[in-house]
Image 1 (tube, each protein chain N blue to C red):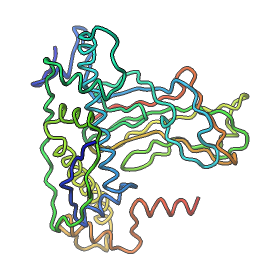
Image 2 (image 1 turned 90 degrees about the vertical axis):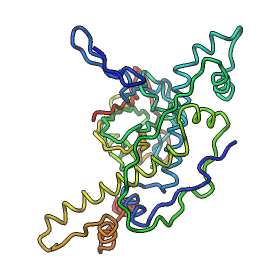
Image 3 (image 1 turned 60 degrees about the vertical axis):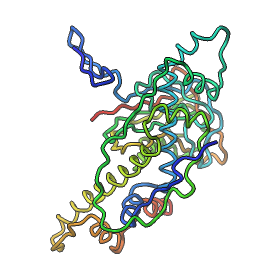
Image 4 (image 1 turned 30 degrees about the horizontal axis):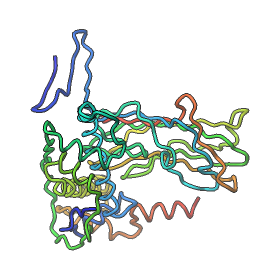
Length: 191
Length: 169
């Protein structure tokens, strides 16, 4: 077992509010799902591209245990890492400090999963950080777009905060505002 | 004609003008065996939990046979599913849900007992066009209520339990 992302990841209060507007799970739980997707993609891609070569080099039957197959494939002379690079990270328009740690203690990964991740991504930890930062960026943008349209249509609104943090804080402080968890809890009560 | 980046061929046009994208995120999968007693008493069940999905194709390695598709990039995804459920006796609500990170899509909401055929079978399905951020996930869930116990089976004959998605734009 190995530890990934033990250096952690911090989000700001407006980040959290924007995420909670859409996510029913915690940011950590979302990150765990993202990591599971990364592990799945790494292992599947390696198997798709190299398993036949690996089998061809064996004289008898091969193990059906992925914990044996992945190190075996990576140990082949002809194997080349994918070096999948991180896309350009979007710049989140933050005013407030990133004060809340959401990856406390990092994430456990099996040895063969770590091998596969490192063979596929140039930097798996940086890739997961990219996914989280992109998630904050996309949800903040979606939140502003969604509520800005309502405000622009409301004649009683005379000004709109120019900065994302201020805008998100303003909307979330309004009476009657509910994030996704609160909305779904309310719907369950009505059902 | 082919269009390539530094690594792969990602758009192919044939001599007869059909265009394919061999690496575009897209998958199709079905459940190959029955999955018994999964819901009926208000239990929300994620299809693939007990009985793994069988992939027909998974072009970009984004699907896990436990039933989770993980979006490789931020974009708009077409997601479709059909689910056959058997064993209705008293159920009055029957849902098929495509659960994405950014929200649930209740693609089918029926009175199951009123719609079953003469063998107690109901097939439901639906399709959505969803915004997904990179690393978001989507799964298919079913929920039946009114039976008093989880007696509803997922029955897979002729691929009647299907899940597929593709990145559109």
